Amino acid sequence: MDMNTLIIGGLIALAVIAVLFLTLSSDDSARAKKRVATMSGPGKARGGKGGEDTSGKDRRKKLEESLSKLDERQKENKKKAKVSMAERLEQAGMTITPQQFYIGSVVCAIVMGVVGVVSGQDPKVSVGMFVVGGLGLPRWFVGMAKSRRQKKFIREFSNAIDVIVRGVKSGLPVNECLKIIARESPAPVNEEFHLLTESVRVGLSLDQALERMYVRMPVQEVNFFAIVLMIQQKTGGNLAEALGNLANVLRGRKMMEGKIKALSAEAKASAMIIGALPFIVAVMVHLSAPDYLAPLFTTTNGNFILLGAGTWMAIGIFIMKNMISIKV
Image (cartoon, rainbow, N blue to C red; front, side):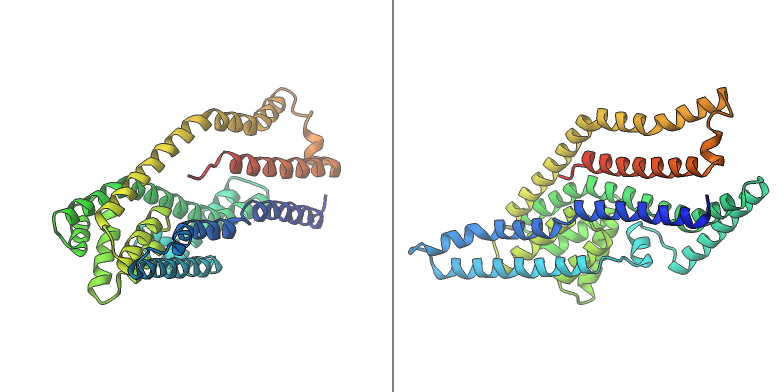
């Protein structure tokens, strides 16, 4: 099997996976529009009552304007889909610069390539190890650090909101409550709120500071927090009650995520067993009869069979992962 055939087959497999991914994620914009319409709809429905005063209309108008601006900003962020390496490192909580990251990636690639050559691997395998060491492992490590940091933030974020609620009820201003969180909350919540208060101190508005906070910590919880503070700043109202309701919602989301994990644990275990079964069977057959599977690797038809099986298995794993990944 020549290299051109392998490249064409790999491109076809990548194209099929990309089409599936775009199909599953194409309705994000529609959901965002539906959410904004739902939040602003009741206000419009009550607008026709004759006994409603002017202040209520003005407040509802400001609320709709705030939601429209927020929707436009989210659309702009979606258009700017590509995240720079500096932002990824910042989201992962790493203090290294992009230049240092790229230098480390080159070193990792060289080490992996040398290991492949020294261990006597095929030149194609050594090249693959070189590419994985330079483009795969470092970015995988940054992604893992980012995911772990976001989980820690979400775990402590509702407690931080409770600090603001108790502070506002006792008469403290919002900025002072944010400073308390920056001093006393565990990492990474204290780090993000410290940057938030410093941004406000140097002259940024609270809206701009919250937008930068969402860039550093792109989770829905921060987005909800920004929406509540922005709406309260534009329209007024009981901030303690609004944040208290938000804290309860966030705790309910965590409880629902725990239930989903418990209910989908069996399906995930079954998926992992099914995904690992072909490799386990292939290893056992190779150990018992080494020549039985040799045609798959030494003949053109066998290579096509391996390529097709790998492609369909990758598509199946991708579909199962999306089916069991339920977002709250």
